[in-house]
Length: 329
Image (cartoon, rainbow, N blue to C red; front, side):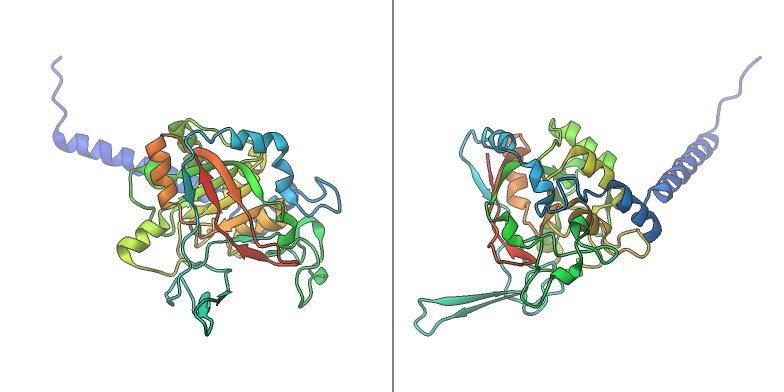
């Protein structure tokens, strides 16, 4: 029997059908990712938080994972003595991602002294969050009541607890490089499979005590297209990444925005990643880091792990601190 050749239109229809099936599967997978609601997030919070893991009086959270051995591991990565700042210079001009009052620099009468004023929480100033910055169900990390805080500062979990400074292994997770784009578009979620794809690409594996830095290309996009409302539209981690962060034993999380994908895709919870990290895990966060120079240095060195050093201003009861973390290769 002679077979008739398959026509071009039949092939097109077949490929279209496959594409629809793949798209439908992707949509179902996206919809199936949890948490999707505040109730699901609350269930996750109760299941995986670190409360009392290091004792009822603990105020360090996952900084407990930065052991002396981990410090030595980070220091061993210094081979060439190349240093890279992870901080964006404070921006004096108001913009959609830098509200008025975020930073003010006033020179003294002699022009030999000056005053710096920061309102650093938000999306304009590179800073570190202390563990008293966020709460969930009216509780701070380790089941501490917010009533411990007063007008003079946080009674517990303030930034002074990190006065000894931070020295550990840092790892850059460069998602624009992974995807072959200059930057991720605002609203792009980052999932576990993206992180693990980057680990394979970079030949590095996140382990206990590490500080991870999420590059979305926020500053590259700002340079190319101008500022935008990062608070409502930014690339970042989807909340489904949180169990992975717990399992890997990540000590610190940083990003070039504020870690969460925005909008969060979790109905009723604006920043689930921020909330779990600070109030659930006891994990300090570096916000608004400028990771562009780090990405260039890491690519030039062909290694994405480095020694990280950082020292916040130890304000008693402070909810965080501006700071200038340094990566050393």
